[in-house]
Length: 81
Image 1 (spheres, rainbow, N blue to C red):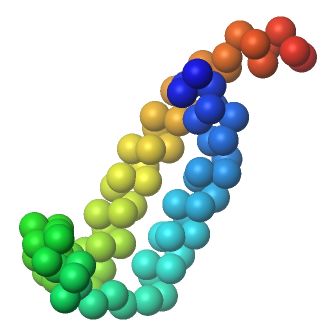
Image 2: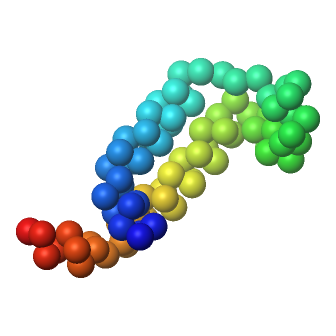
């Protein structure tokens, strides 16, 4: 059921993460305060450069795209066509 959900929602998920990438290109985040208190190791990596967050996000978006593209079409969808 989970694989079916992500197969059906694949384009919606990819649209959203590509929107995040676009925002990461335009906006600079501050990795301080509450964000840093809860995610110190991530924030220290993001602080390395202004583009580090975007670079790391691009890496995981590529992994997500690869995983979603490997999903087989659920049989209940095939039978409906």
